[in-house]
Figure 1 (tube, rainbow, N blue to C red):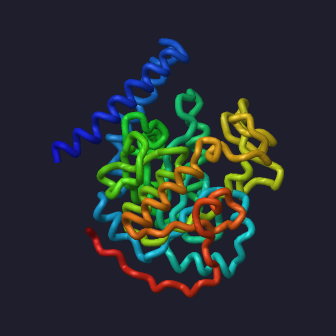
Figure 2: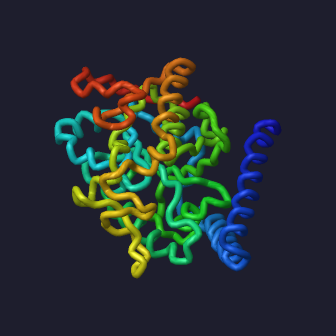
Length: 317
């Protein structure tokens, strides 16, 4: 146990120190002090607010799995092409969303992972309130288990919990980050890897929870569109309101029809290596739902007309 704690704590301490140093170098002393004020305020408030929520441990999360297949959802525009009959078939399995999938109104969501928001921004609250309002009011997330990053630098997660922005009684699991490159971790207690984007967090968590088939849907990567926006729109920042808003160019400077930032971070190669590792070492299959996704070059396309798998109740490990 002591050795595991050492392996987990030391990399996170080094990461935190590097982040502090980078922030100081890039933005100066004043901004570093303001940022740490945000971090400390959020961390303290989160501690005091825990009684407002159902804080779950790994055993409780493992027990919530109901099937052998899980659909992991990004927010790509191709989700609009899924038919009602296909959504019904998907609903026979567990569903796991991440980040902006909260805008969907198609399928019951069993698990949803949240990592970041507008970190470092002094106007974080406008975005956080809008995000949580969307999540709280969406009936398709009424019983979802929410995976939230659980570290000192998890500013967004600590803020939405500490300020009571999530609905009271929500089921929460706080996960830590396994720093460094490498294959997916084997247990949630080891943390989950964040490589190339939040997709890796969701896939690693799914592998830890024991699903034997992970299907990636709405992870298109060939453009920067999102399913709830118009066909010629992406997400930009409205400086006046502090909210993300429809735009032709996103906050990173890429047009809606240009390759998604996650692909530019190497996520296709990462998922290709992870698919090979999971299948070879752990017997876990990965596939992609959209045949046009860039991920189709590194993993099989999901067989939409394949016979449904029987639901299997997960047993705690």
